[in-house]
Image 1 (cartoon, rainbow, N blue to C red):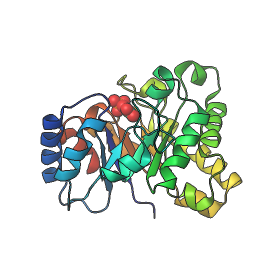
Image 2 (cartoon, protein in one colour; image 1 turned 180 degrees about the horizontal axis):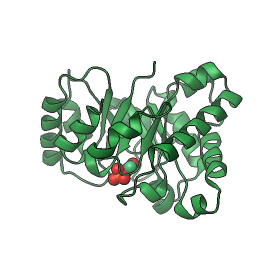
Image 3 (cartoon, protein in one colour; image 1 turned 90 degrees about the vertical axis):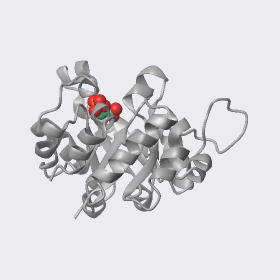
Image 4 (cartoon, helix red, strand yellow; image 1 turned 30 degrees about the horizontal axis):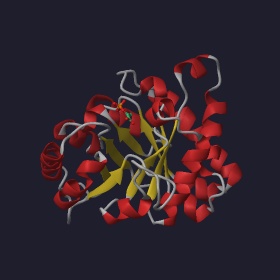
Length: 250
Ligand code: PEP
């Protein structure tokens, strides 16, 4: 019922020529895939070049962040209309690295989500607990805080233009993956939360991705969980072969 979404977050990697080469190789490897939404999220500088390579392909373009204002005196920022103009369909918002290093909060995430939606960009909203929070039994409190804070004020239709990515911070870039059961537990918690705040129908339609050291070896097992609808992939998306294998998890 829900189409799996596999997104590659390239973070602070790839020059324009490297990004174009990676995308060219990926495009060839996944050309026959039609049952998965495939997304790449290059750095801002490579968006235009990657957009040219993916024209008429089954790969969609995402940015890694957006600013909440459309224009003005905000040096260094990039707005939703600019991302739309360069060909983005999606934008990652609230990644844990932005929360950790750049002071992103639930409030700023929510403002960015609204700015993205106002310009027809689909937000991929990242939520996730730190290791200490998991170890002290706070996972659900943190997830509820991130989810409700990030989507505050959205209509059901707006929510359904979003993707939620559950990314336990302790699993990002560490090689430690959540077990399929751990991922399923949190994904199902998020769906229950949305059932309470929206409806069972809305919650059942929303795509919830897992992120955190997803690799070709663990993708299939994670994605076989009933509430895991895809993956947000960091490290393993930097090579066409490993990302293509994850895309073809089924
Ligand atoms: C990420 O950046 O969202 C991520 C999950 O990274 P990695 O796959 O490298 O853990």
